[in-house]
Length: 111
Length: 111
Image (cartoon, rainbow over all chains, first blue to last red; front, side, top):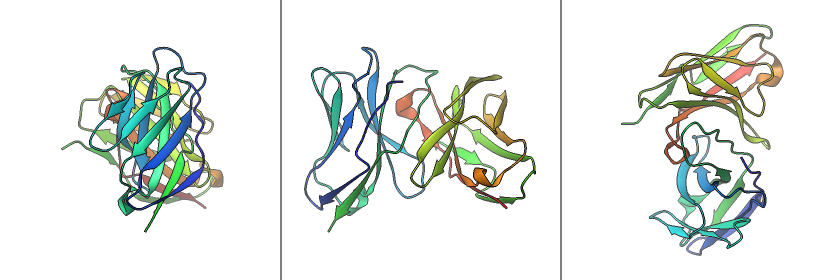
């Protein structure tokens, strides 16, 4: 898996968009970018993933740069419930894949 | 309903004891994982199994071993528990990285 780098913490005002960056400069052509979040001590939950095109679902949007060396997770209207640790991972999409998380970004949504 | 269960939520053991942490999933997933989570160090992969009797080391396998005799069960073994193995242990399973599900965690204290 390619190494990813994220800022350790970020703040965001409630109702504003939260933009969480991730660098993955060594990502290979077939590796996807996955995002998860972990609330309190629960296990991480999957949010979204993408290969090269931007993706959107009911939870978030994922913007991947054209060179695929970085990406941004966007929570369009952050709420207090979005306060969590967010993990960015680069790995292959098929089965039999290790999934390693690292430290992630602690997002604090401020009222 | 998708479910990953772990044998204990809280466990207290003495230094030098052999410790078994059990994880069971009911989703017929091929892949199972053991992680530990520590403040400031994030979520680190200990071992990964992609099939019965198959295992692969994660980032921090030292001091641990695993067993997967049946598809639904993945055990983490601390052969001789030490105080630096005091941690939260999380088990997970998946078919693919976007379908990863976690158990509730076991908080292990080694005294």
